[in-house]
Length: 117
Image 1 (cartoon, one colour):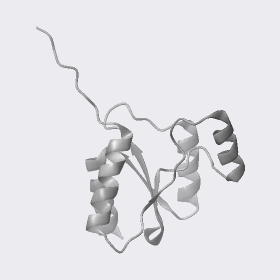
Image 2 (tube, one colour; image 1 turned 180 degrees about the vertical axis):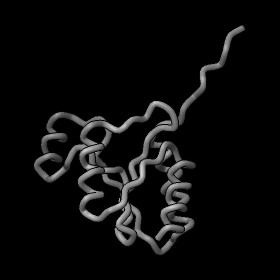
Image 3 (cartoon, one colour; image 1 turned 60 degrees about the vertical axis):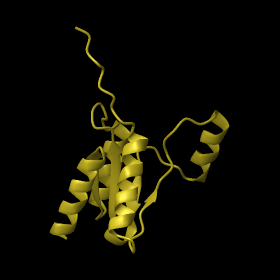
Image 4 (tube, helix red, strand yellow; image 1 turned 90 degrees about the vertical axis):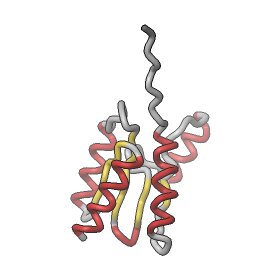
């Protein structure tokens, strides 16, 4: 009997759901993306690096809460060595970082962050 391969939502899709939920739930709190990912031409990648792009910076930032959010797919999403190093640096600098494996996980961690703070 043939099985249907499970379709895992993209990181983009999960992040878009998270941002939509966050903006509805906390309308007065700024959340913004850090456009580091994606495929770019070599010339664009060089220009962004010169402008200050840094490998491993988390996907989202909530300045008022000093909270960074790194989004990953529900399955298969892993932190790169650059991301691990940046997260360690950010946390040692007084920021908090959550790694959300999908929208629901990121939402749960955000709600836990609010309870604790």
